[in-house]
Length: 293
Image (tube, rainbow, N blue to C red; front, side, top):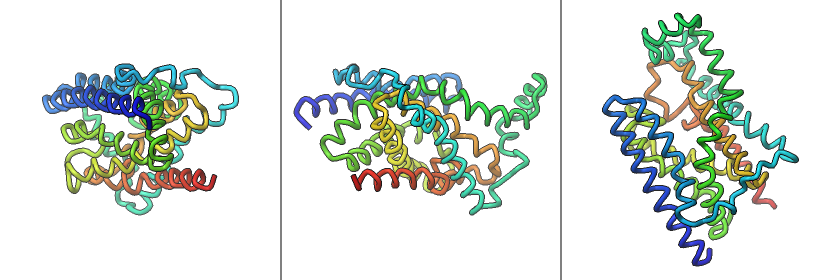
């Protein structure tokens, strides 16, 4: 890492964390004030903080692989699109296999989330709760990853496009990815602590254990996303994978027994210890495979 890269990285981190944390704190305040619309909007805006940080730190947008590279990358695009659903399904299945009482095929969790008013609105639109589940699962596998891509690229341009290359240049590929994943996880901490983002606020060891576990998960996800970027040299591919992760993220909770909603540290989501095992295992495989080269 030369002096210019060090200055760019320092400036990038200051801007990426500073902008995002201001927005996350504001979102947390809105969440606690019962304003879900403002909360969601501010949280979505915070996803672009890394991209803005790239510009303000003068890293150079042209150094990022913006050009769509479809030719020769079809298999990686398909992998980015569907792998998160496969890994997430395997993780959820493993969790429900180990904790069978957590599985609820009567969709009680969803009924609680929707409430009587939400169910009434569905029925008025001609949809049953079962149909809503089918539509949600189909959207998570088809168009939702592509919609999420345009928000996810705000993060990917900063993390995988700018920060990871500098860290890998300085510390080596593995250590750079691990450090990058930890920083990425810490970046989420304000909203996790203030609004119970990802794990809620009533899990064991809250609000400490959730953010710490999340850093392990972001290390694994970061390895996968950076691996895709290295394979394709196109930032849109890890952005698609990131969008697919976000699209599928909440699907397993549809089948979660409501009495287990405060145990998301374990599963069934990919951010849980058990639910995240396939993701962790695949990331470990990437590290092992690349370590042999």
